[in-house]
Image (cartoon, rainbow, N blue to C red):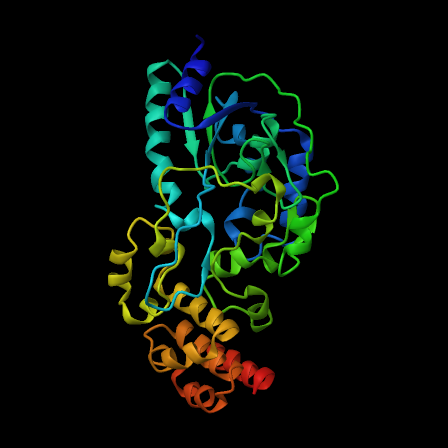
Length: 363
């Protein structure tokens, strides 16, 4: 068994599906990424625009890089029951129903890197961070294709797949491209609430609910509120309608109902430290309490103004100006312009402008 195959075998024993890809990506992926960046479709994720050519060709940073192992792990968990009690209105993206996948996958990558050294090679593993185009390498492996929603799809596992890439010093042969099995289906495009899928395989983050509810740390533009609907954290609409995702398959680990259906009121009653303790190990911690509280206010303004009214007092006194400004805007949107106007005095200039816009739009 050659070293690359031995490494792949070790990854399979750890529960991953494994595919090989050559170090050099087809030019089409590099051009697509540069076009995406140059058109501003990465929104506020400035890190994605830093040295894009090194992302397209990791050998610029790692001259020893000869071939990649693409590791994938299913998160097609069945939906858990909604817990009783609390304010459980907001939807959470399926991947976040269990422990943060970075924390789950990274120890495996470190172990595989150690094995790589023992086999006499060099390796570097990444999971959803670092200078690697994971989906492009997944497509180059021939194990699946990039669907209309921009996600990597396989016939056996759909698109609910975490991806990691292990760069290695061993060469991998080019693979034949997988046929695109989307056919004429455009369910993902038709069902995206914000029209974020702007071309086949191209998602504009400036319109994407996942960007605004997870990545964005500031105030959410008022024109984006209606499209967010009841999504508290992320969005799966383009995946739930995909025919390749019809049946959940992942059985381990079991999803946590408290992560799939969190109590929205907890984001206002917990301190940031208490929030970090309560949701330790979850994807929520990376976004932080204030972002979840901000999102909860938008969800309630969209779906349950009566429940929102019960939280406004705490939200308008929140330590985070971001939360206070969002609460004031939510008050304006739900007919409480008096509360919104009174909140102006507790806000800085930019936040006051945000609330003033809400008063003009909704008041």
